[in-house]
Length: 337
Image 1 (cartoon, rainbow, N blue to C red):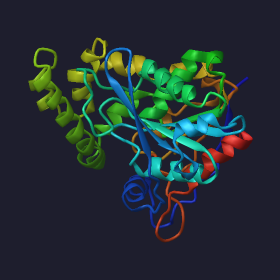
Image 2 (image 1 turned 90 degrees about the horizontal axis):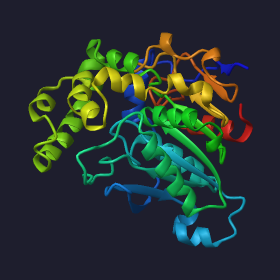
Image 3 (image 1 turned 60 degrees about the vertical axis):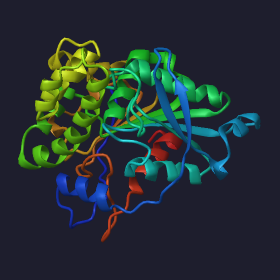
């Protein structure tokens, strides 16, 4: 059976005519309510750590919730995007929306994204199923009686979708999942971010500034492992991933990394009800390479609105708000539609 398809649109403001304006204005000026988190640091089996930010009803400690009768409680693991965190606008709007409805929300930070450098030469990447599994199992262990859901945005969406496809029925303890603006074809997305004035001068420059700085700091601690000159001279994600991400994380090069870490080939293996939400005007991933219904399992709903840009999906008339995306996630989680 093929996947289901939804083409209904996101009601973006009329004065935001295309994907770049919807992405940039939505991320920088989209209105959203904010939520505070409680941080938990968890050591990993390889000697590193991950920071989990928890948002709970009434700001109760997670341990206190676990001691209660929580059979009917719903909980959401939210994976952030490239260089994102629990402070990212989409994470704030989603976490506030679900916590206000009685859910527990946890944002596990990929290595080095919580504001504190991680301990190892490695960092994180788009297809790190091992860390995704560790994050999910850690969250589940804190509230084992809750009904668990998962969502990922951008890089986090690709990593989650790949994990779900690889895991198949073993991920069946998750009630439903969603991947938002996921670059499911990393090769197409990576090359696309290197083309065009806005992609190169705004998005790529923004990512490269923080990525380079983090890795150059690592190089001072691990001088024999990281090629400092290649990282310092990298101008885009292709060159950065070829100089650092691929070799440090066990890939032969950027082409091998982008191919093996892409979620697209794994979509037929998804056995959990999953929403794949991608705007067709997303400047990070060309609409022409978005999956069709025969490229994913019958557990998948492909929602591909014509508008929405990348990650935030601004809605409204005058000042855009970021309420549409969390409402869309809630609708899928509760109705599978």
